[in-house]
Image (tube, rainbow, N blue to C red; front, side, top):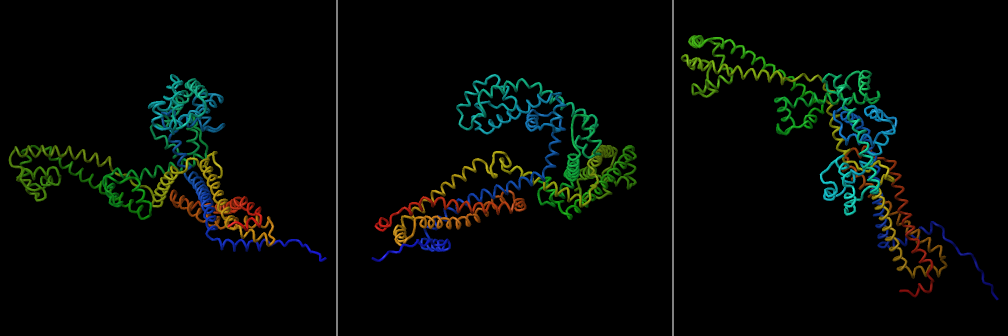
Amino acid sequence: MKKTEVRDQVSLPIRRCVQLCIRGIRYRLFRSAVTVAIVTLAVAFLMTMLSTSYVDREVTEDVRRRTAGRRLHAEWVDRLSPGMSSATLATRLSSVRPGSNAEKELLGWGGLSSKELAELSALAARKMEYEAFLTEIDPGDRSALVGTREGDEIFEYLRTDLDGFLEKTGNIRSGSLPGTGEELRVFVKDFARTKPLRERILTGHAQAVSGLAEEMKDVPLMSIFLGEQAEAIAKLARHGFLLDSADFSTLQREADIQADAEKILALLAEGRMRGVMARRAKVKVQDITPKHVLKIVSSKRGARWIREEVEATRKSTTKKIQQTKQQLTLLAELLKLGEQEILDLAAKKAPKLAELLQITQIRQAVAGQLGEKEYDLKPEQIFDAVGGLEKATWLKGQMQAARDRLSLNRRGLEEGQLQPLLLTEERIVEVAETWREQESLARVEAALPAETGTGRQWLGFSSRTGWLIIISFVVCAVGVTNAMLMSVTERFREIATMKCLGALDSFIMISFVLESSLQGLAGGLVGVVIGFVLGTLRSCWGFGLLAVMNLPVMLLLASAGACLVAGMVLAAMAALYPAWVAARLAPMEAMRIE
């Protein structure tokens, strides 16, 4: 009897498996394209969100770094302004840090202990949570809860009708009250109890500002940062305002920019300069704004032009003042004369009398007296207008009115005389560019995502975006699983044939999972490219060149790799069940299925 030789089954190398999978994908191109498209959508969505998040975060950090000086300057403008509001105090209390200058200032102004200030800080943070809740709900719900009350008025009202408020909050659908009703009850009670402490801080701050203003002798308080550092810091400290040298240097730079910018923008107040700048900006005189002026002088050519125009305007105004003085001198001399003396001058045709026609008001009056047009009037015709004592009296009356008018004009010209623009062209350009840049950054800062940089994020995503990504991947997994199950159904005969030729269950599973992974790789590559382009375009649309300047290349490359791996893993995991179904098929049963 002949013996049967049993050998170990041959296993295909991974390279051969990949070749077979690629060939299978080519034969089932449509079905493979469906899987690739599903993975592409999921990966593109993830890459879009990642790239947008990272670019936004980089832009946010860059903008906040570049606007730190402006924000510090604005903070001190608010700090040195009299009459701190309760809302501003709440903001400062909620953000105060132990050991900071802000804490020491508040302790000094209010004469508080650290424990009392800590309690006020916690209450301020809680107050802002309740105010945020009332801001975010529908206006109708807010009106039903607190009417038109604002700020501390809300919590004064809650002391009288807290039960009614809590009952109404249960009926609104646009938001939920932070915490419990009992916590709100405790807060309202503590907020009312600590009111005298907050009033002490506000009173102390008002006294500090008043004392500093008295010491500055009616000079604008912010001009303190234009002086010598040690003296300014000591002067501020005497009134409870604490400032370190690094912040002073920043404030000094900002104050210099602010002061020089005001010198440039003050040109808008002069009529001639306003007109020439409007023509330069190609806008109507009434429509010209500081933005137009700063745009004009943001180049060296524009800075040179503005300096020349200022000098031309000063010369023109000086000439008008001198001319007005000469006319006033002439009028003063003639008004000392009597009517008969004026008649004698007219009879002698004295040039001094003819000079009166250089005064517009008298020229118009004489033209009306003679029935002539003003621009046709000749100097010698004034002698014809003075014919008799009555006409001489009339002329003296016109001279008196003209003198009063010219005196007012002279005073106005002298008061409105432009000061020399004592800034170099380079400094004008620097101030204009800095101002325009800060204005642009302020607009970008206002458009930044509200949740960027907060602790409620993961990988830069808000919780809402994170859930959207998870849902999209679940939907993607379901789609890939469905596509692979359909592929198994279509390939029953192929699977049975492979099993009849000796293919093991493990080979069938590996083939399906590997095929799905290759499709995931292809979809991931396409999705990464699409997601990167969409995410970058979205950031550029919002932030312009700032987005391009702050592209986190390494982070985006790492994100692309992570998205690619995620697409492959997603496709492979989604193919596990269909691969298991395919591997469990009995060869004879599969052959009988049409």
